Image 1 (cartoon, rainbow, N blue to C red):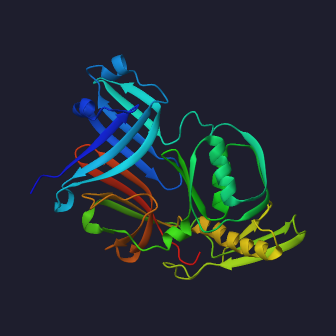
Image 2 (image 1 turned 90 degrees about the vertical axis):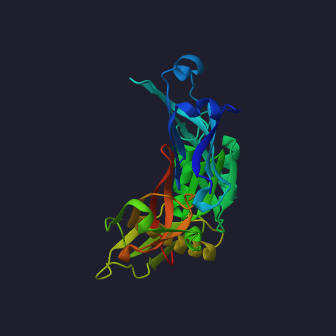
Image 3 (image 1 turned 180 degrees about the horizontal axis):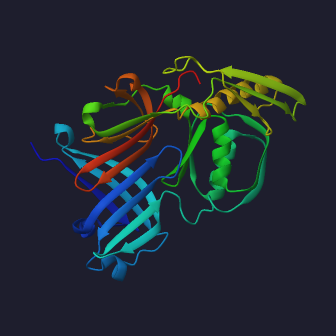
Amino acid sequence: MKARNSRVEIEYEGVNISEDVSPFLLGFTYNDNLNEFDDIEISFDDRDGNWHRDWKPKKGDRINATIILENWNGEEGVISLPCGEFEIDNPSFSGPPDVMVLKGISVPLSVSLMDAKKNRSWEKMSFKKIVEDIGKILDLKTVIESKWDGYFDRLEIKKESYWNFLKDVCSKDGISVKIFDKKIVVFDESEYEAGEGSFTIEKSVCKRYSFSDNDTDTYQKSRIVYTDPLIGQKIEKTFTAPERPRYREQTKRELVISERATVPGKTKLEKEINTERRAKKELRNKNKESLQGDFDIFTPSGFISAGQVGIISGFGMYDGKHIAVKVSHKIGGGYQVGLQTRECLEGY
């Protein structure tokens, strides 16, 4: 049987530099995040001065990275994980000994996604069309994985970055958003969480594990009330969560939502449907972080990505279906995975 091996392929400004830099690679980390930017960090032994004297990395330089596993899990062959394209935003140099660290994010530095404050409005447009319009403005492709497509009579951004605006709009209706490989990706969390588990984490494969079961700022039900400016009527809806496990008695805490912005919909019926949906999703936003898991895995059987649903097994009361919210892939002394999860919610 051939020995297994792990390595990372690195393209720098379109040139494959893997063989040149492999002898100097100290460590590589790729953080795959569910609802944030992805990022990488690469550390090099730079005693020969290649980076800080000759190559001189610049902020905005592009890096493509792919993790390669050879002869993994007792099977001959190669499996790979394309990490996507990143732009260097924080090169640093320290010593002795001389070490160059390149940090990059999945958002082009030339795109005014995070910092520039914008004023803009959209009228009589669906959620998906608004996302696509922002993508065109920022020269980013869009990938939309959500059945829901609410209609907005008017939606407005005032002195806010496109990123914060998009996250806020998505969050209210249970949608996650991330930037990956020059794409805006939006998806419905509850649709993901309703899927079957595609991986299993057992205690025997964990180098370290911990669970946090937090009650702070969680609620049993939600109530939303507002007067809709489009139809000129008051709308009120309530939603009660299914019975939550690990409570001696169910709490009676109620989340009251005073909705100022227009809830999507063209008619009163659509408004009522979307108001009830929003009551569910705002309650979900409060409760979804209640049970969280954190694992370091010895020998992962394959690649896990943020957004995948898996089964946590062998931990007693903490067993169940979880969604991966952050996956840290590390190369350096072998292949290691750090995994952060949260329990999937049922019914909302």
